[in-house]
Every structure is written in structure tokens, then in C-alpha cells.
Length: 469
Image (cartoon, rainbow, N blue to C red):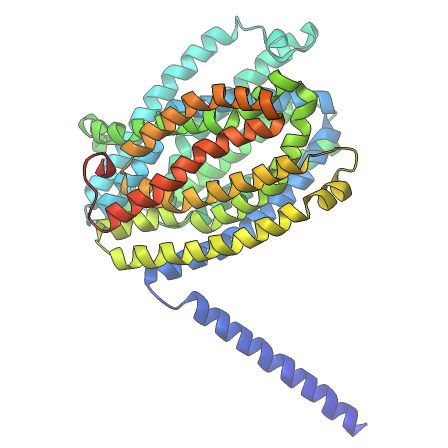
């Protein structure tokens, strides 16, 4: 009996000390190095947890929502919300412009200037969104949503109300989410991601209540999914602007439109780059559908989602880096920037091995995941190559965006967007769906060359001309 007690005590003692050692080394890993690095590691770990929870909630939310209404009405909601979501480009890059200017002002200790940038951005976007909302209220009455969404005419009045509700909440969210820009600028992206998690959880809870108390109603659904992020952002704004960011809280007396030029000059560049990226990376579905029919879009999207796991994970790691690079560059902490880039490159090399394994095992994974869909290995190979290029470019793009040297990215982005569609059509006709993706890879390959070159020139104070603009 005593021998069993001794054995259990030894097992307990070993487990206890192992747990202590694990916690100790984890603590040492997180809290060693520069304060900026410690903050980045903490945010990355929290982001993995928050993103994981968000994925679980979204997986629960989709079937619950479909069961509340029906697949057709759910499709109507998705289409309508995506159409309205395109209007997010009406910020004309002010969000990203604010991000860089805010970081620069705070890093230099110019807190009043930072507040002026915050207040001015709120003021400008409120005017833009106010005009847009009034315009939509007028034209919404004349829009034939049944024709736009290809639905029965009997749904006209319901869709009119739904569109109005969705657009009003979109406008409110559009302005309120500037808080997330400020928090991300402060190198705390995990806090910003928590807002999305909170609104998703609130939506899940309310829709569950709706399933128990009402019959499927598209307007109730639209109101719930539109209102929840707005409620979360209002509560968050009240809290943060009276506590953590009280000195940057937007105020009418700090709105100075003469500072709009500083925000717009940088913001417009980001805006054009975003549009170019949208054309470059989001046009494949349309081109494939036009060349080969909608049926060929399915295998492409399945393969894209499969390899898309890698950039999704990689972007979590990169998400704190934009703001961190910007602050370090303003403070001339070049050593930290170089060291951080080297660490991210090592991670990228590790991901290369993972992508290679995913590519080799792709046919087996597809057979298990979607046995009825046949996906050519060539398509998987090219998509794997595309992911490698895309993640490589993102390593240096975070630095380039952070320091605001956007002229070269602007030129290549516009050129790539113009070349991609005719090149994709040409290669698509020659080698099929894989050719459409190959076009994006070819354009991305040139970006993969100049991006690290510009980083090297800027960080070593050797950039001149377009390399430094």
C-alpha cells in the first residue's frame, strides 16, 4: 500500500514540477527581449486564441442562421450585405492614413497632434458617411432589390426595409470602428480582434433566442447582425475614450480640416493600393466563371481555402508588426527592425516546408474532404507557389506600409491590376483554370523581388528617388 502511495506521490511530484518548468519557460519566452517584441508576442498568442474562438462561433452561427430562416433567404442576406460592404472603400484610405500618422505623433510624444488626427478623421468620415446615408435613403426607394438580388417581387417591401436597416448600421459601424484603428496603432491588435469576437458571440446568443421565440424573419436577422457590432463598438468607445485613450478622445474643438491633407495624401495611396489588390487577387472567380463556367469555380475555391490556412496563420503573426515597425522607424530603432524581420523570415522558411507537405498530400486531403470534387494537382501546385510568394511579400509589405514609403507599391499595384486580367484570360485559355492563378503568381513574383530590395534600401538609409517615396 505504501509503495502505491510513493508511486502516486512521485507521479504527482513529477507532473507538478513539469508544469512549473513549462510555465517558467513559457513566461521566459514571452517576456524576454525588447518591450516591443514582448508586446508583439503577447498579442500574437492572444490573437491565436481569439481567432480560434471566432472560428468556432462562426461555425455554430452559420447552421443556426440557416435553420432560423432558410438557405435561400440566407443567400439573399449574404449577397445584400456583401454589396453594401463594398462601400467600405468610401473611407478613401483615411483609416490607414490615420494609423500611420497616429503612430508617428505618439512616438514623437505629440499627443495633442495625435488627438487632432483622430478628431479630424472622425469628422471627415462622419461628413462622408452622412452624405452617403442621405443619398442611399433617397435612392433606396427607387431601387428594385428583387431584380438586383434575383428574388420574387413579393419580397420587394421586405428587402427595402432590410437594405435600409443594413445600410444604417453599416454607416454607424464604419465610423465607430475607427477605435479599432487607434488600438491597432497602439500595437494591441488582440483587443481590436476581441470586439469582433464579442459581436459574434452576441449575435449567436440573440439569434438563438430568435429561433425559440419567432419564426424565420429576414428583417430580425438583418437587425441583429447589423446592431451587434455597433453595440459592442459603442460600449468599447465609451470605455476606451474615458480610460485608456482619454487623451486621444475625439472632440469637436480638435477637428482641424487643415490636417486632412496630411491624412489624405497618405490615405489616397493606401486607397489606390487596396483597389489594385482587390482587382489583382479577387478577380480570379469572375475570370474562371466567364472562361469555364461557374462549375469550375468550386474546385478553385476549395483548393484556395485549403492553402489559405497558411496566410491566415501567418497574418496573425504579422498583424502587430505594421504598428511596431512604424514606431521603431520613427524612433530610429533599426536594429530591432532588422532582428524582427530575420525572425519572421525564419518562420516563413518553416512554412515553406509545411506548404510543400500540404501540396504533396493535397490529393489525399481533397479525397477525404470533398470526395465528389476533382482538383488537378497542377492547380494545387500553382496555388502553393502563390501562397509562398504572397506570404514572402507580406513580410516586407508590413514594414513598407508602416513607414509609409508607398510610391513603388502604388506603381506596381496599378500595373499589376491592369496586366492581370488580360494575362489571366490568355493563360487561362492556354492551360485552363491553373493559368488564371499562374497570372497572379507571375505578377506577384516581381513584387517578391522589389519588396525586399526596397526594405533593404530604406532600412539601411540607401533609398533614393522612388524607393524612398
